[in-house]
Image (cartoon, rainbow, N blue to C red; front, top):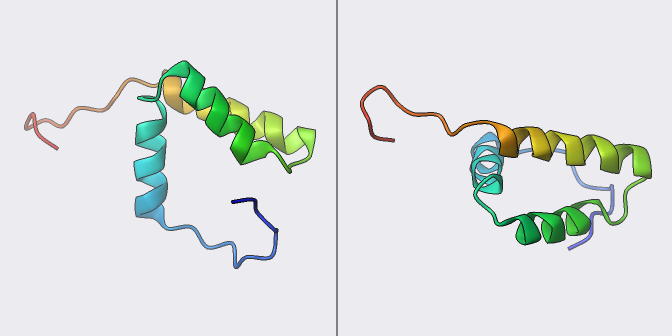
Length: 70
């Protein structure tokens, strides 16, 4: 689904967190494919910023809770 730029711009923080956590668990090929889909209709300057953001997320170690569970 391509973005139209006409949406309300509201982000569900819970959904965003789930997506960000799952991003680093995707195989490299799946991440590359998703990145193409996410940035297909964007100007190059936005594409670069988004790619760097997701690379940063993927490089972060997964947080652990003090109790050992989630």
